[in-house]
Length: 173
Image (cartoon, rainbow, N blue to C red):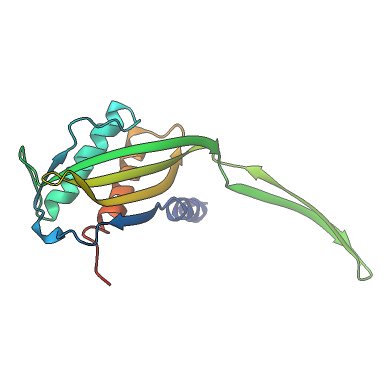
């Protein structure tokens, strides 16, 4: 039973990975950016607790990479989210079949598990303060349980923001 619960949790965490798409200004010199702050008027569409979580996690991840939060930043960071609620796509399948003489008949159905989920599209913008231009943008799509605990939300945002910031600065190909 313990093995089954570990397997189910592993599948849950693997399937909950956010996908991230990035776009950026090819003319921007990303090596010159070392200071940041948040856009003065962030309207993320999230509640204040989630805004605070995202800012704290972003601060931690950027400061680990040598960025400095400043009152006179080179980059403004803006973020916003779009959310929709849907039923979990996870199901347990049950099937019944029978047959003989080269003929088979089967009936199956799926029982939804996991309740409702929030499908979230989180967009993060990096804006050059001097030029007032968008220089980098990442869009992450993921999902979390509708009734997620604060710890589950924090784990979700850490995972999503790590994936987003792993793509900054962009690698020239």
